[in-house]
Every structure is written in structure tokens, then in C-alpha cells.
Image 1 (cartoon, rainbow, N blue to C red):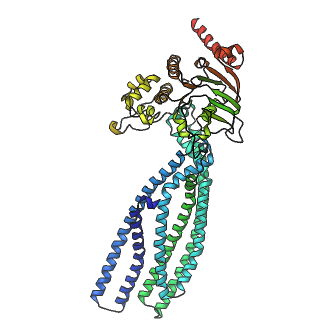
Image 2: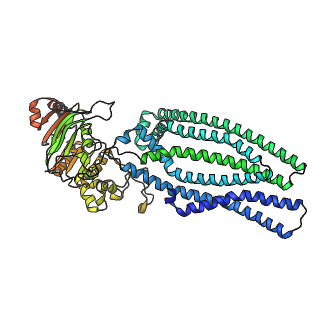
Image 3: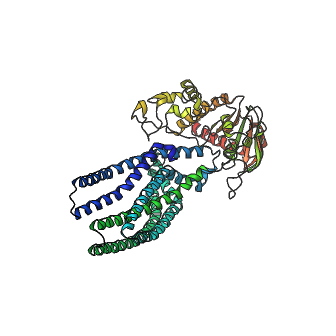
Length: 594
């Protein structure tokens, strides 16, 4: 990934690393040669000048190289971060259904993948090059020590091995702790987002729940802090022990050097070289151990990114999918059983249902009866546990999901409010025509939102959000907020934008509208669905009574089916529900008349 992000950056980084590794070693040897020359009383001016210029050049490199390496490192991280983010979201786009995004373990892994995916590749490459740099320094200084004493390099290496083991253990524990704290940190983020969310602000202030939510957020933060603090204390203990051992070794080596110099066995320059070498080896060893531990930890975390990229499809997609032909026959649910997990109850139980071609099917039922689940299965957000759903007689599982969904238009009960302009909100219904102003206006007019949008400060370019500035040609212009009913008209406009799709799904399309507006919307929808296969879901039975076929769901099964008149005559569940709603309207009307 780093190589893809920039080959020349890697080359520059490698060259800078090697040169920077040689600088301390060269400095130690030049200093030794200069001290030995001065100690012997030599007066070779040219040689002294050369050594002095060498020291100046080393000083220049010492000041320049770190800045070059910091720039290259940051530029690499930026480029790799962009590449990694793109790869990650390309993978999530390939998920056909919704199940992965309802799995807490997957969401924890996705959060860690987002954190580590962009930063890890560049950091690991930088870490490996830093390891190369410090290794060159260590072995260079060890070679220098070998000149002075054959046993000194062995002692230095032996003193570093326990510290390396301890650092690797700490790195592994830190990586494991980040995974263990994933649910805790996600809950903290949940409470934090609530406290800063404009959607939640009204209820939080009205009900006075801010302190309660803040307390819960802090509880999760304290849990995470407690665990990380405990690990930090362990790390402090390990570093203190290894630091003491290193200091004792350095003190012993210096004592030996002083005694050896006093005895005439080594020169003053050798003492200088030994001091520089031990200091260089110890500082480089600390850096080396730290880099190895950090690279180890980052690679342990990077596995979450790789596991996301290597994820199996959430729903199977055939290698040779059947062509999704225009809907010319019925849609059939054949003995469909479904539940969201093995631990949960069945939502649909042996459902057998035919949606006639060119007609409107009205779905009615209490909350939890399975209406919205049926729609999710039809859009292939999930697959049935048993049974099949057929489009023109072909099982949906044999089709390409993207092609199937291209033939469906929908307004969902939990429709989205995008923090985009009014035109962009509508254009998302059909991106291929999103820049066609006439199409946007036609869709908005059909949904009854054109007059509303035209009255906004910048018409279709008005930002429907207060959390951003408009940007672009509008600069720092603030956006506007809409009411729930106005947003629902925008969502309907998005459905109209999809034009004459084969299947139209309307799940509570007018739940947030006043009675007069609801009537206008349904008049328009009746014209739009004429001679088109459509499914209409609503708790307001007056909105579905004119459907060609009404189906009443009860506990995942079909309890009743027929036209409005047939179900009223049957006197069953539909008739009771209709009578209750009608009585409420009649009572309200009588009170108004009185």
C-alpha cells in the first residue's frame, strides 16, 4: 500500500534513513580521530581542517535530515490513509444486505479498521526503516566497541534481550486491550454524539437528561482509563527495571574505560569513542525496542483492517446471475420463514403471498407483524431462512442485487434526511439524472414540495442543515431546517425521482403529514401507481382501502386477504381495526359539530 502511495517517497525515505544512521557513527569516529590527533600534539593543519569540515557537515545533516524524514513520513501517511479509506469503503459497499451493520462485533472491528487502516501502513514502513536505521547504528557502534574490547559487544546485546521481550509483551497486551475496550469506547462515542446532536438536543433539554447521559459517558471513559492506566503502570515498572540495568552496565563500562586509560591500555580518543558508542548503542537500543514494539502492536491492530477487506459476502451473489427482466408477472413469496438471528423469534412464518402485476397490494397489521421485514426481504437486504421470493418466477437469490434494486422505487418509514441541498436530497433518488433540473422540479412537483423548495432562500441549492455552511458559490451561508412533514415531502420527491420503476414501495408515506396534505399526497400517489405494481403499507387504513388487494399480517402469517369491502364483510381483524379508527374520527367530528 505504501509503495502504491508513492514510490519516490519510499526511495527518499530509505536514503534518508541510511544516511541518518551513519551520522552518529561517523561523528563518533571523527571526534575520536580529532582528539587522538590533538592528544598526540600533531600540527597537521590540513587534516585538522578536513576533520573540522567533516564535523560541520555532520552537524548540517543532523539538523536537516530529521525534517526531511518527518515530511516524507507525513506525506506517506496522508497518501496511504486515502488509499486505505477507499479500500475499506469499497469493501463495505460490496455488502449486499444489512446484517453486518447490525452486528456489534463487526462494528467494533470496523471502528478499529478505520483507526488503524490509514495510519498503520505508513507507520509500519516508517517503523521498519527506523528499525533499519537504529540497527545500522547499533551494529556500527558494536563494531567500534569490538575494536576496544571483544567482550563488550556481547554484554551490550545480552543486556538488551530482556527489554526486547518485555516490549513485545506490552505491545501485544496493548493491541488486545484496544479490542477489549472497543464496546466501551463505542458506547462512550454514542453518549458523546447524543450530547452534541441537534436531533437529540430538544429532548435532552426538555427532559433534563443531559446530566444523566454525561454521567454514563464518563462511566465508560473511566472504565477505559482504568484499564489503560493499569497497563501504563506495568509499562512503567518494566521500563524502570530495564533502565536501572542499562545504567548499571553503562557505569561499569565507563569505570573500566577510565581504569584502562589510566593504565595506558587505551587512548583518550578511545575513551571518547567508548562513551559515544555505549551512549549510541543504548539510545539506539531503546529506540529499536520501542519501534519493534510499536510495529508489532500496529500490525496486530492492522489485522482488523485486513479482516474487513477479506470478509466473506454477507449474502451470496451468483457468479452468473440471472437477468433481472422487467416485471411482467407477479412477485411471489413462497413459504417464507425469516428471523434476524437464531436467538430471536420468527418474524415471518411460512408466508405465502402473491403481489399481482400492475396492481396495488396494501399491507396492514399491528406493530411487529412483519410488514417492514417483508419489504427488506423483497429488496434483498436479507435472505429468507427458508422458502423463496420470486420475481417473474425467478428466485431473487439468483439475481444481481444492484440490478434488482434498480427496478424498485421506495419511500421507507425511516427515510433519510441528508445534510445536503434540497436538489441533492431529491437527486439521490436517481444519480444519473441528479443534474437534470427539469427532472428535479418534476419530482418535487409530484410530491407537492416544489412550492416549499422555491420559497427557500436559494431554492434547490438551499442547504437543508444547520450543522454545515453551504460552501461553494454560496460561501458561508447557513442552511435551513425543515419540519418532519416537509422532510417527508422531500423523501417522496426522491421516490418520484426514480420515475417509472417496475415496483413502487410506499412504507407509511404520509405518516408525518397533516390530513389535508395527506389527502393531496395520496391523490398524487394513486395517479403515480396506476397500472404499476406497488406495495402500500400504512397504519391509517383510509390510506390503503382503495388498494386492489389488502393483506392483513398477524404474527408473521397472513390472517386475512381481500378487498376493503370483502374484509369489512368478513368482520375480522381488519374490520375491527377499521371500525376503531373510524370511530375516533366520527367522535372527533361530532365534538366539533357540537
